[in-house]
Length: 337
Ligand code: UDP
Ligand code: MG
Image 1 (tube, rainbow, N blue to C red):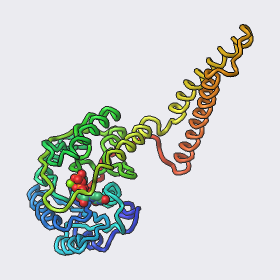
Image 2: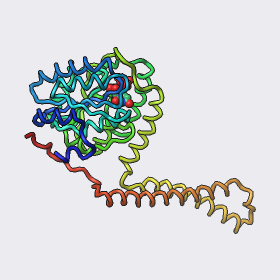
Image 3: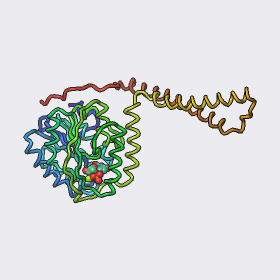
Image 4: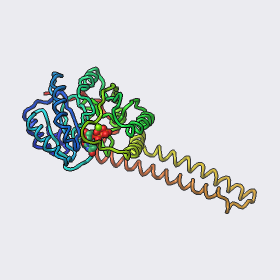
């Protein structure tokens, strides 16, 4: 049990719930931030669906530092339902951190994620779980049609295509929180920043089998969205990070080294040409812009190659000092007791 809680102490609610339960079959993880008017219906709808599935379950509600009375409602829900485990984050750490906290505490063979604003329809959960039972490691929801304002739909249309193209993972909807995955996949995920959108890309790098299913989506009825247009730029930067880490995370010298060789090579050719005409054609080269370009390219090349070597040192320090493997094992999910 200690291994399950290696990152922080579970709340009193968690301990209380654990006393009542055996290890559940399904863990539902829901990040919640200022959803005071949604949480009661959320719990009601989730319980209705999960109870009909005929499998033991736990609902891990992660309160991400709410300050609108959500916490008090969640506490009352956790008190009344032993299947609910409540994790209270000290402040608003963001949706990714909330997912991560939930994952660290999840025990079910199948982990299902969803949003706390009821935009995802809980009645889709059995279909996702059925796909996992078919043999997939991860099943992603595809909100179809998506019931959000155009100001969200347009950037996300471009974002989804870009992520799909850049990561090579062919999904239609990366922003849908409704997902199901096996516990061993969840255990292997390390999430940072706002990277929960890239869970499929990271999982795909781990070698998991992925599929998507269209799911019903509903407009937000109560409360307000926590994201604005600023999200687009952040997603683009995250995409760059994920692309870099997945492709070159263990071999940075290949990326920086190749760029360095290309720049440095072109610079060297330019300098060679200028030296030749200076020495053999007796042409003055001191005032030529080409000289500046050649020197700049050559120096940039040298710097990039050195970046690559520094990167290699960092990677080795990280993997060797922390005993991090550069591979992922396919493990069978832990057996229920
Ligand atoms: N959320 C969270 N922490 C945050 C922002 C959002 O836990 O800092 C939760 C939020 O309460 C909701 C889910 O993440 O349950 C999705 O947020 P939202 O509905 O605002 O996103 P949208 O559907 O507008 O993209
Ligand atoms: Mg929402």
